[in-house]
Image 1 (cartoon, one colour):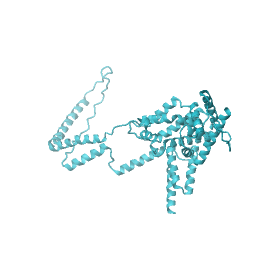
Image 2 (tube, chains in turn blue, yellow):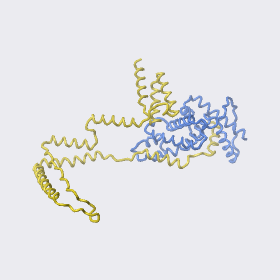
Image 3 (tube, helix red, strand yellow):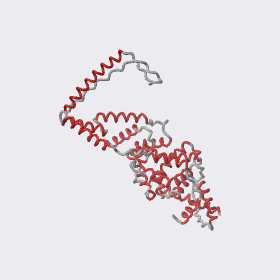
Image 4 (tube, chains in turn yellow, purple):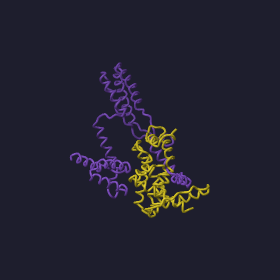
Length: 187
Length: 229
């Protein structure tokens, strides 16, 4: 039953001290979003201990501010915004924690991707994609992860990263093109 | 998503999907559990009703039988006189010391006489009964008896809470909070009161251990100046 509730409904239940299902509601919410949020943080930091620290701090903020959550806003936007701010905080404390960034390309040719021929090829391409993703600049990597792991729209990504939708779209487009290029070179 | 994005999506999902360790899951779930206060049923209305049910018949009974209150006060005086005589007699005799094996008590001094108990004043009218009932109800329901007391308690609570908050200074703020603090001041300088208000609310949510009184005052002052222009 609780599995069918939206994120916002689960947060409302969790923040209601008189709701007997409030703890269960949080468990459902946590199970639903822990993976994407963890991967978002992990792809931004290169130290596992810091990843755990930021991840725990993120959920602590969510728990401690549950009464301030506005059910009219999307839970994912709220949670990822907190996550991003915690990452910025972490970067300012120790800039070497940031994932290594490569120089941004200004012009990339459109390259089509060929479908993998078999399952083995698909696995190889998936591994290659993962490696190429690690090498993307942080902003592009975050845009890609937010789109494909967290299922957010470009507009929502723009809200989370606090920039214009056009810029968020541009970062995502560059990410896609670079990944396509990496896969094409792999073949 | 176009076909390329769809393919990237499929490939991404086939790549290793990291998950947080189970130990971290347990810690976070425990923190969520700790944030939920134990649900206690609200028994206050039942207690209030029970007190009325008990007190009203008792008072009515006493008003119907005033001789009981008169007899009680007379009876109480006599036993006290007897007790006083007995204690005087005890003080004159030596009290043997009782060893550990027997009782573990040492009686080397006469016990002091019990303080005199005053008889309860008889209730004479229904108005007095009503007053007693109201006072009893207020005490049990926990409602404050006077606004002055409430205000005093509130001020004391505020002072105690403030004592636990950290002051906002460059040395106490985290880098992120310092950025937001700078942004807040910029909003005020530009006259963006609403944005400053929103940012302040966010800061209070994200950094709850700080004392925001100064910032609230600055915002209020800016609002006043903006309204006067």
